[in-house]
Image (tube, rainbow, N blue to C red; front, side):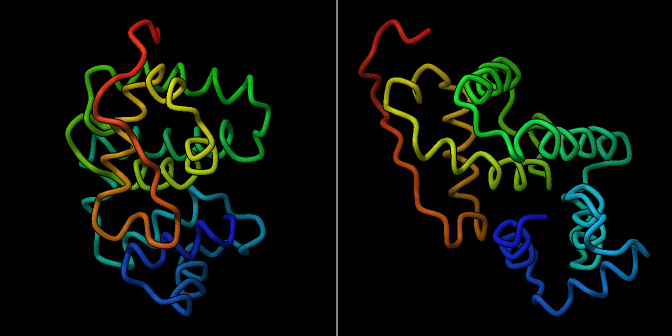
Length: 165
């Protein structure tokens, strides 16, 4: 897990950096081999915030979103690929408040951290083009304890462009 994301996740869960090692020992997987999805769930459990993993049925979907973050976002700096990712996410979020519908989960937190570096650089027109992503992102960045050290991304409430889709 990237150091900045790991520290942000630890802080949002109310854990200190020292707790990271005990979570890694709990997984019994050496840290360099762990993916975000492997280390994140034990950290959530250690923080006694199991609700962030979702219900029994939702846990698999949360896991899929964590793997999506690892495979699609991380290391992806190609602007064309990012726009494809945003377009897909825009369609997915059309009828949802959070990635799992109406429940805030760990998937929302980690996807927010992964997308921040891209969303912060979007133009107003691009933010309007991906309006569902923008609404979701704005909502997540105002969730208590999530944004932390990351810059606040400004979204306009009134649309400037009438044909953004």
